[in-house]
Length: 424
Image (cartoon, rainbow, N blue to C red; front, side):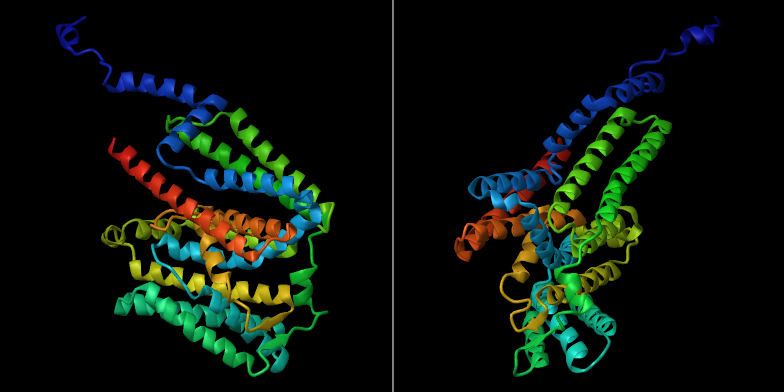
């Protein structure tokens, strides 16, 4: 050994070779079900609760209503619940978009009612083909959303004020379009009404679709595992990936089999889920989605990072108003009519509450399209359970309000926990 070799410092616990050895240990420790559970516990401790609170709440709600009336979990009642979830659920998807950028749209209920009225007027009264009428209703929604974005981006008008003004103006347009009769009945035997009230997926198609999420989870899990291992990072084990994908597939197949004991899986709910999946992909896998989260987290920082903040705000408002219009069209199909009551009452509040209850943050920068799915199932479960118990609708408002308050409190506490964990 030369003199230079003797004097050369030996690797310490803080040098690359020692860190490499430790990284190997971390990789082995993180693999397996135990490593996944440890990571999950660490995420919860850091305030990243995800969908855990709403899932726990849903289990509690279903348990209580089932014990009071076993008909609640019957296959046909679950099918009706999913039909009812679809209309407001689509509107709630749009609310997720504006909440993600830290804004709000208070006019989604009126927008949905106006879209249903416009569709009925063009199709039934003016003789416009139904698909063209629906398309025009969606275009009007997009224009309204673009107007909100213009008022916010160019004039600095708070979205709370502009959309509140829009709520009143659009409600007036809805009453004007409906005319003195106040309602337009849609042809009961039409494809649109059949879609909204009766159409379900064939059992074979339902079971095939139930296989897709597990297959995608399997493919994505193996792909992520290989990428992380190539970078010498902790990665999930093969057994853990297979276990999670199998559990999801078995659960979905069991749900489909149970719904098939009734009328089957509603086609309308499948469309709602398809929109949620598409939006979740856009929010998590595209540059636009990352920009949405960045703008919602800190708009000024996003602007300095080169993100076109005005364009992101515009996309959020346009998507929200367009999805509100689509929800109104689905509501008209569900009720086989467009009336003055469409979009009024609790539609507006339920759409906003569903997004928040499902886990989308009121502070912006955090949320998921699936939060609208979970949130609206919670709200409709409460409504369905109280209806079966023949209880007053006043209880539904009080219980839904309490659930919403709890969701906001949990979100606030989780946010404080994340801040504290980050400082630590």
